[in-house]
Length: 131
Length: 431
Image (cartoon, rainbow over all chains, first blue to last red; front, side, top):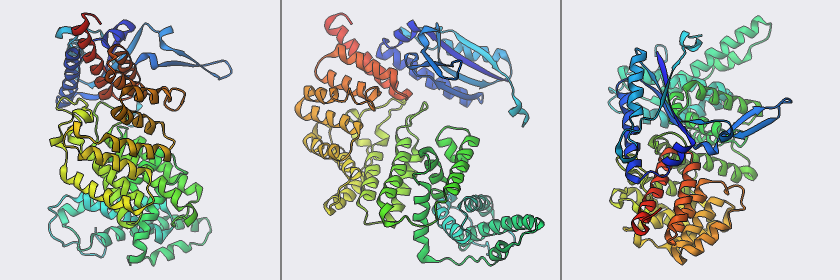
């Protein structure tokens, strides 16, 4: 079964992240690389991506006559997706365990950041049935 | 392949097949298109022949004449298809002349037409009627001989997506009625520029991946170099092809030094130059040195010359910046490209100091093509740091980090900001 592990952050998190020390950044980047590699090696990896900065993001909505209305995300969202992993595992417990490891990614000073990781099941689709 | 008619009793295959098949692809495809006049169908037939070779040759051994083998298999596929097609039409009461014509197909190869064919293919795949992403995909498959799966992997998209992109590209060629022949002499220069642009994009996609967690996708850079090399074999007198090839060689030679073991981006000034590929640099320098004096200097030659000046310096501090600046002066006059103007500003800063560089960068603020580009902030940050304005430099490094589309680059820019911040804390006791 597939799960998506979503790393969410609020605006304060993003702003703080840009001010981490070089050592803290290096430690965090090294962890993320090693983590993804480990997921690949253990045969559960499906996909991972990091997302661009939320202040570059827009929310698009089609207006009544179809014209495009866009907004910056800050006006409408409290939390922003920073990145995600999709994994293919045997049980939800295994997904939670992996999510907990991602949550413990080192923060400032090397202590676990304990970022919230949202775990959602990715529903099997018609594609899985070969349709 | 039973019934192919060419004996498959060569030596056991102990060399990797890929390079051989990739080399043969455009030659075989050219022959098939010339014979059947249907690029889209011929391209499919050649892909099937390549697949047959990849599955059969490892066991059966290399055929005596691999090219004739592939051509004949592709011919057979085409003939079968035309027979099926005309049988269908006969049922609809039409005459089928194609089948009889196709049945006469032989594997005779016209050696004179062969070189032309490869060129025509390249011009066709890089036709301005195609979107750049289609042209890139089609060139890699039809001329480069890569499989759809390989191309999909290189561009980090699902195979089905890439297959669709390629088939739409072939449909566009069909719809626009682009003939299978060399462009006329009037449009030739412009069409060649389009070809070089596609090859350049393939190279830079491999060198600085525009997306994804890894910085380099070596395979694409190698493929671009190989294709440019073979284009140069066909048109050895064209100075810009030589310039592009030299630029690729001189840039790619620094590949190993661009990233450290942690996947971090290392800028040119901090690279361990012992890791540079010296033989490749020598080849690039020899090529551009032989090309420049011939006259008709173009943008690729100038960029290659700039890369050569960088590569010639054994230490960063030995870099001949006045010469680089002079070359950027020429390049800036030749192309209206804001990225060139940005690099020109850096070179000016290295010669006349950061104030001059910042002045030139400021002039680009009104250029909508680049005003919001992360490179503008990154260069400004770098020059502000040179000027000793750490606070402003940090601000611009962070702004650049927020805008870049590359994760390794974002990490690099954030680390530059962090490094400067901690220097400021050490000096001033505050951020």
